[in-house]
Length: 428
Ligand code: AMP
Ligand code: GLY
Image 1 (tube, rainbow, N blue to C red):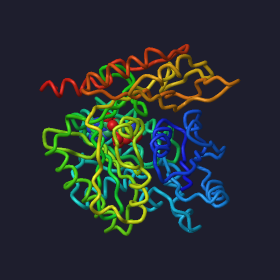
Image 2: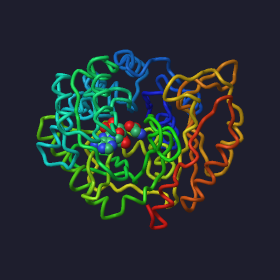
Image 3: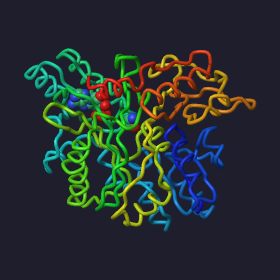
């Protein structure tokens, strides 16, 4: 089969790497891709949000399956457009992707169907939001309704911070139209985990558990990023908790979408806060996580293409995924300054040596080629991913590879995976 993967980040390199191992795949295109995806196929210079250009390309090349990485093309309706053209595509429809595209929709859905989540209010007028904030006080979370590139949720420790967040989103319009409405929700205390599953609209097939590290600095300090590292499995998600999340959150969410006339097919990703009152949903995403996909694909034993085709064709019933028993860790190497401003075009040294280490894969994200050399071109540059018999070994292998890679201004967290160690040791 000819496959087209849409996107250019670490998640897409990880998907392409895994798909390239499928017996069913004859050729992989990535649009627009990065130097990492080019190792396994051909990069095509079409942007991920140019959904018409992508459709024309898929028709011209006779692409058999298109796999959509990021949320933007999904919310723009790439799936509907491809299906209308008779093309097979992995990812939810426009109507279904709204679960990520609108936080207001997502929260109201959860409320209607009794899916556990933080208490919330929706505001269209800043003055009403300010009055509400003054009334409730304390810590709360202010979220722009629409897509904001992972920056639209602002965790506020005080009334003043919350007022500032509303001002930024609604009055200064930091995220444009996405901030026309805000959700203000109760602050939840606990540990986060990512729960990602395939669903064909009826059957839900969970992937292994994983955990992201969103804040930029060690010890979960500093502003949130797209994710500075991840590991799998996440010991905080015990078997009991996994079943609870599956039966109280994931399956009800898929049924709820069906009930709303928005049948859901593809990946459903729940960001979960494990609170003392049980798991609660922070958000739903309509796609694979980045960087969670990197540690997940290196552990997945099944043929990814086969699972994707079964998802699209509604044949997931009876599917159970098999996982490498080992643990995996992905450390994101970023440009100094990210998630704020940073410099680009720095030559990256040591990539090949790191990539030849056993049980290590270096996934590219914000890289490009200049005069035959790999240079930095984004905030999150690489996702160095390693396996180990224990989480400690996985951490050691991964950081050994990270230590071999250099560029002027490389930054990474030094504590990726440490929470898992504390958890396995019975602490927290
Ligand atoms: P979201 O985009 O809604 O997942 O929010 C991004 C991040 O903000 C989450 O991964 C959490 O770290 C944090 N967050 C979101 N909602 C809450 C909440 N209600 N309580 C505490 N932290 C939250
Ligand atoms: N790692 C967080 C996300 O993919 O949204």
